[in-house]
Image (cartoon, rainbow, N blue to C red; front, side, top):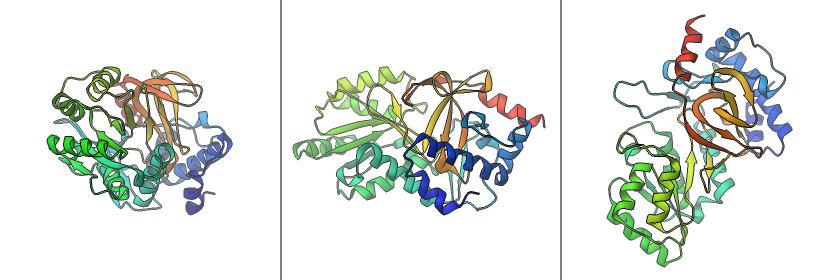
Length: 328
């Protein structure tokens, strides 16, 4: 039986594959019993018990657009929503314990980069600032506060101010992270050429309809040239998740201990492997009050060390998942 407080403390202190697997089985049992939508989906697949990770059903991410994915044991405190184009339905993530999200993104940041207090955090996230309900804005705001640096903050279109702050930080040899949505970083890079020695450029992906879509490799090549730096970092997160993966070079992402990415055959949702190419399934043990096991619409590769890369999107996954529920 899953004991909530014990489970939360354990997922952020996982030290082995065996511990991770045991917590996955606990999470499945808990969510099968307490998450009505997930239980219905598992029943449609005729799966009620599992003994191994690769037997666990992954809920299609499109269900977050049409269903309230929440365990009946807790009510929600916050609703995060995805950005959406005109006429499309946004995903809604009902978060019943916001402290778990806060603990997750802080622990993840520390795992990859050390304490936020070691950095000035500069957030260039105009498309997210212009709407409500962004989990990325929530995370960035908290990291900015935890940095305790007066220069830290959000930037909408204040490119000149941002440029001056970066120049000042470089002169002081102060470490900083410029976290930006792709189109905003490109806009900034076209105006200012910099020689970065103490800063990290971290893109969160997304053109949000503002610019032509380009590959991550093309984006990184442009940004490395503009900012005279060897590597561009990336953050991989979703509205539907409470954990984030990070890439420090070449678009290869690594997961924190409570998160794992698996690979599936895009045309066979139950064919799940630990390595290979295909569509991505994500285990996020922090998502215990929602769904820990999510079938995404991202295509990519998972490597033998657990790292992964994104190569595109599989648009039909949404249709397949919804059809399955309708057929009940």
